[in-house]
Image (cartoon, rainbow, N blue to C red):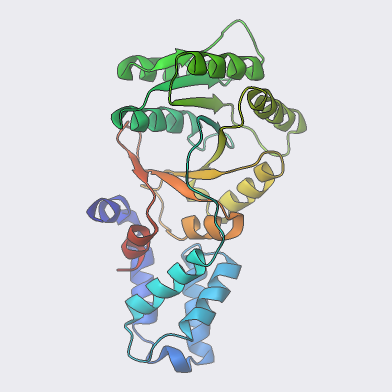
Length: 291
């Protein structure tokens, strides 16, 4: 849990606000309208969604009389998340990473590849971002440093073709995982979203073992949920990697994403180096946010 506390040191303002709000409440079983209003404001400012905030309020009214506010809030939030039918965290053989520009996709691809390598898994890293040459070069350098199989093709502008070749190569090498980095795009760009759908369709023609990760910048707050919703209309999103959490001043966005999308957060990105990737753990996350 120490690593989570160090990671989220910048959400101290959120922790302080939560402590100030909840320590003034005498009894959760008899919450006044003012208490409810203060709790609501506190949770919303912590970047919890409206729906999750309202459910948490209902849960708080059911806690035991002598329960501490830390345990009351922890148990209420945990109950809200664990009551959901969130999809399995299990990762499939092919991981396609999608998201808007600047959300940390390329860095995430390299980090996840390194995570697998450290855990004795073989990986093929595929550079299917045909719009940003720097992204291809970045992945190439990282793959060379970590001795990971790397696939790119500067002679084509068709990312689906590169993805196809990459998956074929990974399967031929008997690699455990194939990670595909894609170009950043806004959901409002129909052509680019169609391109993304084509990548998925081409990969699916080879294997059904596909996990679609959406990369979200933790600083975008509720806008990150909107991104996930829109990308989810085009692709079957299965996992989330929440990036730049070392720089965010709010901590509730992770909970809101799971609550809204019913998909697990698999990793949290907390910096630029290979090691700055943490497997998400709900217990540790909540304790770091509250206690």
